[in-house]
Amino acid sequence: MTTWLEGTPSEYVQARGERRWVTGGDKPVVGLDIDGTLGDYHSHFLWFAEQWLGVHMPSASEINPGMPLHKFMGVEHHIYRECKLAYRQGGLKRFMPCYDYAAELTANVRTAGASLWICTTRPYLRLDNIDPDTREWLRRNEIEYDAVIFEGVDGKSKYADLVEQVGVHRISSVTDDLPEQTADAVAQGISTVYLRDQPYNRVQAVTGKRVKSLRELWGQISEDLEVWREFND
Ligand SMILES: [Mg+2]
Image (cartoon, rainbow, N blue to C red; front, top):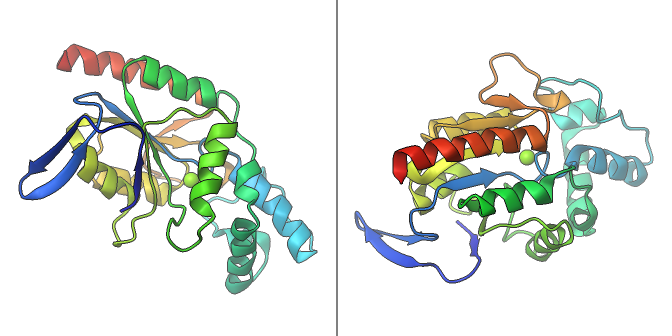
């Protein structure tokens, strides 16, 4: 796992034979994904792909439930992979559009006394500009956070890492745009999982409570944190 920790961890504990960072004491933890949740990745990537491939791309607002992105784009999978690599290597992640209310949401979460963990599947060790580009995007868009979890290099999912690092009982909620990620979050024992509504995730039986905007998400999270306080203070 790869994690940034902002500030000095308050405790470093030995739990059941495994070493675990415990940050923020017993604060509740709110997990947020970046691409497709805090930022408009799909529109930005499709815009880039149209320039890079020199062929017309569909609009990101078109409904494509459950379709792999390369099929939606009408290109073979290896072409899609090359294009995505060019997007990442080109530093495009620095200026991906940020959704309205992202900065306010993250500030509100921390003001409400929760610890905010960014959980992304962006690769950390495979491309050496991912770390600085992600930090720069968060800085530019005034996203507040306590820690960032990247895709696990040990084969674990980002939500498995989050559970391992803070303990499942502390996780108030996580929010993601991908059905496979919300399903994994539930599989890891996370009790409250939100799905950021997107054209590509409007599939039946998708896991997670659907939220259509970051303002709506804050309404849900603030209620969750009030419930948390009632049971934990
Ligand atoms: Mg995402």
